[in-house]
Amino acid sequence: QKMIRSCQSLNGIGAFHRATNTASSLRSGPVTCFRKKANGSTQRYTNYATHDRLNSHRNRRLFSSPAREKPVSSGNTSSAGTATPLDPTREQLRLVALHAAIPMFGFGFMDNLVMIQAGEAIDMSLGVTFGLSTMTAAGFGQCVSDVAGNTCGGVVSAIVAKMSLPHHGLTPDQLGLQNVRLTRTMGGCVGVVIGCLMGMTCLLFMDTTKAERAKKSKELTSIFGSIMEDSHKLVNAERATLWMLDETKDELWSRVSVHNDLRDVRVTINSGIAGACARTGKLINICDAYSDDRFDPEIDTLTGYHTKSIICIPIKEGEHNSGKVIGVIQMINKKEKGKNEKFFTENDEKLLTMLGLHVAAFTRIVGN
Image (tube, rainbow, N blue to C red):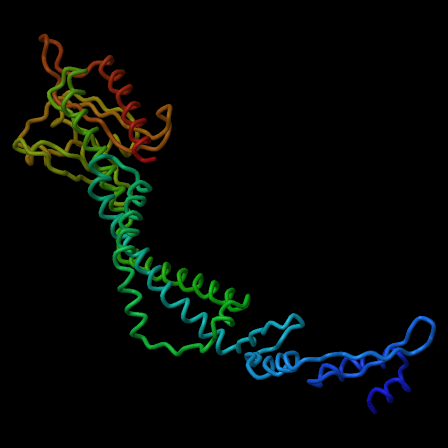
């Protein structure tokens, strides 16, 4: 009642009414309350507060679950109440980059090394046999490298695991930070680039033009076969030889039949009728080879053949037979059809000149 009177004197009827209700909720028996009527008079009434209401209030306090405490975060807390991870140190970022770079270095090194070795092997075998380009062989080598990376990837991971690299000590939340993700990506890129460059060092110990020379040699072999087997029929000669010029050594080389076996033969450009034709770039047609001082009988000694009449046509790299000399077509021993025909005629010279243009064009295609 004292509390009711004090609230009534200080805060008016509203506080008086709230105080009486509060008092009634705290007591277990009937409580006498007062309320002001519309005409300004005060009416007295009895509020029957039961034990159930008080017991209900007490039970809620005794048996309700306690409030859970919020965990304290080591980072900063934003206005929304979420914890912000701490920024990693430079040393931690360096370790993150190291952990990303070393495995990618291993993968890059293995990928390039296997691709180059497999591509070279395919280029030297299938490429030469079927005329595949170097890029095609490199594509097959990349397929082999991908298969090797898929099957041997666990080996690289196991080697990296045995290295016992120091751990960066970052939490999963810190690993999700933008600067950490960027550092991991950059570390992996640097590692794979360095690994690929290291894998390419095997090129320093390889003959990178060997496959191309083998392909050109095969094409030239087909040219040699065509010239030696069929071209001599054009001018009714006994034999035909295609000489190619090796500018680095100043030599002419060819493949001639020695006791029914093809062998490579080399002569200097300063000897023989073919050498004179290559030096001057002019057609040479002689009836008696042994009467000419430029003739070198060494080839006859090697092959066991006797040369009588001979004609040499220069092969030039230009489209109109105007470039530098790259080879010589040589016909030996005109077959006798009559008593007066023992040497190559002017018509034979024209036919062989046209043949030289075709050989030069084919050689350009092979060289490209």
